Length: 323
Image (cartoon, rainbow, N blue to C red; front, side):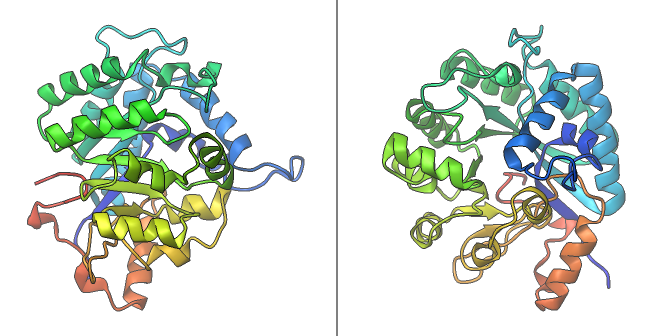
């Protein structure tokens, strides 16, 4: 079976260093879950600098190219030094990642993550400081500077409703509407996230995205593992997409994500979008698994959907904004 190139719409390249270390529960720590995994991820992120960020991204992107990926949406959030002070220049980490993609020969959209806090009323934890900007205007200035240097290759990424307050979400939504940039955000990834959002806002995460103006046709919601039927309807009405990271979900957050995966607007990063009755489908390899394109091909072959894959020469990846 011959297939066109794949598009990985949700990547954290530095997490390539975690491969083989976090995919199974340690018998000595049977209660490990997403939240303990996150601490291991923060520790890895804390060891990065621009040089090592380039090296690990180059490794991940070369493996993606070898596996059949031709473009990647890099959900990038190790922005600053580990203590939160900016590099000189401020976008040194993003530039290193973009340079790695160029050397690997893979097209990239750098999705600049906005990170404000550890949760409602909570300052960033030490492991989160390098992800954070002092205010949303400072974040948007960095986005604007990077976009000026790399036209058409930068997107907006409010990390989550847990990491961004309503004010940040609204400001980013206004900027997205003004510039037409794509928006990617994690939502409904964990049940605790939903509980905290309901406590803070009286709304579920995707409902809050709709309220703040972030839910639009240019928007991709990453995971949506625990999205309600009403939230899926909101996404379908807005023309938004879901990026379903199936391998990540199976490893650290096993749930019934498959209910969402083909019921509404589903984008799974290794595939570009496909409209079926106003619904979008694609796939993601969040943990940089080289086997992901093969697995996706098998799934879509079984579903008799293999003709929907978008060929490399189509030059169109709508949810990443690549034309």
